[in-house]
Length: 323
Ligand SMILES: Cc1cc2nc3c(=O)[nH]c(=O)nc-3n(C[C@H](O)[C@H](O)[C@H](O)COP(=O)(O)O)c2cc1C
Image 1 (cartoon, rainbow, N blue to C red):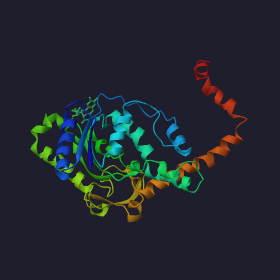
Image 2: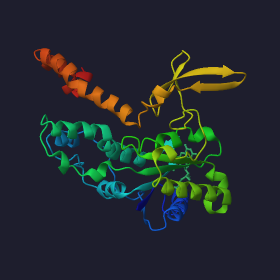
Image 3: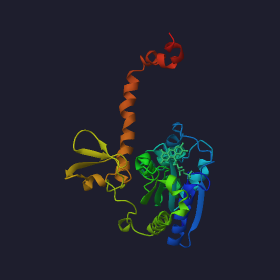
C-alpha cells in the first residue's frame, strides 16, 4: 500500500506539520505501507491553459496526459500511485492557496472516472479509435483521501471556503473521502506541535484514512463535523429565494425547514445518489459536455457568413476601443 502526503504550505510550516502528523497516523493504520511526503511550495505547477490537448488525445485513441511539462507530472504520478492520500493546504484569502487550485484544475478533470470510461466504452464498441485495455487502469483505481485546511485566523469566517474547496481535489477521480479537518486559528496556536488535541485529531484522521482503504465503501465512517450536506459534510449552501437549496460542492438539492431557531436541510436519497462525486453525478456532466457539439456546432455553422464581421471588434480590440 502507498500513502501520500501532499502539503501546499511553507517548508516545515503549519500545514507540513499537520500533514506529517496525519501520515504518522496513517502509518499506524497500515504498518507495511510505503509513505511519501511532497511539499509543493517551491514546485513549478502552472495553471491549466484550457488547450484541450488532453481530451483531444484521449478521443483520438491515446491517453489524456497534460502537455505542459513542469513539476505537475511528478506530483501527478505520486497521486496516481497512491492508495491513501492526505492533502493539506493553507488558506490564502478565504480559500486554499492558488497553487492547490492549479493542481485541481490540472489533475482532477483529467481523472474524471465517468469521462474516461465514456471514451473507453466507445473504444470497445469501435465508435472511437484506440485500445480500451491500453489505457492505464491504475489511473482509475480506488483511493481514500482526507483534507486538512490550515488558516491563521481565529475567526472561522476567515476560512469560510477552505475545507469545502479542498473537496474539489478528489471528487472527479471518485476518491473516497474519509474526513476533513479545519485547522484554523494558527495565529493563536503558534506552532501546531504545541496543541496536543489538534495533533491527536489529525493523527487519528490519518489513521482512519489508511484503515478505510481496506474497508468496503459501505463500512466507511466519516471523520469530521457532520455538517449540513450528508454527502460532503460541508456547510455551504446556494439559495435561490425558494425553500430549495443546493450544496455547491455536491450539486444536489435539498429542502430547507426551520424548527424553532434550528435550520434543517433534507437532501432526499435520490439527490444524494447523484452527488457530483458519484459515478451517476459525474455521468450527468459527461452527458452535458457531450451534448455541446450537437447544439452549438450547427449554430456556429449556420452563422459562418456573418461571424468574421461579428468577430472583428474582438480581434482588433485595441484598435476599436480607442476609436
Ligand atoms: C497571502 C496570504 C493570505 C492569507 N489569507 C488568510 C485568510 O484569508 N484566512 C486565514 O485564516 N489565514 C490566512 N492566511 C494565513 C495562513 O493561512 C496561515 O499562516 C497558515 O498557517 C500558513 O500555512 P503554512 O504555515 O503551512 O505555510 C494568509 C496568509 C497569506 C500569506
